[in-house]
Image (cartoon, rainbow, N blue to C red; front, top):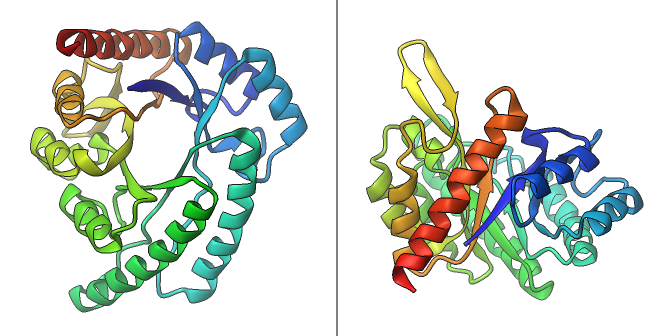
Length: 267
């Protein structure tokens, strides 16, 4: 179980983001937006310089693929084309994981059934491309997507049935949608490659961000469930509470201590 940082939740500046990653004791980074560019359209020489200087691996990238409607054929075909560019980028970065979306959810149940079938076909095509590059795709559960809930994500991945198409699990999204976190995590754990982590509390006025381990997200339970299923993937820390320096440090420390406690208990 490897704790890493989604860098642009702290800063788009790669040098500062890597500084925080090292300072907080995290073991790698997920890249999404760096400076003014989105993966894979980044200043590669400058980025490699900072990564090599910090001796920090890129463990995952999030290029924003398959976020549109699956009925927009031109867009998902463009995304497949862009996936080839992303795979070239990840090869240069020695990065094993690409986080992707699962298309926006249509409004009617009839459309959803058709969209689901189309999404399965597109993700199978994407999985074949990833397999040739010895890379894995991880589909994120997001509000408003075909795979918003753990049940929907598990169903989608079961239908895709591709060894290179796995889950990027967001307990935060599950909690926002009213799912029981333990049950949802148990449902998706065996398919999961990475876990997005942000904590908070749901108030009448809306969501309030909190340091990991101090909100409504039961982090020890989530880690315990995943560990029991043999999860050895990525825990991706997101930082939205201000000031980000100290709150990010507190969250990273809590995560690292929990990982150590759970792995030592069963070793």
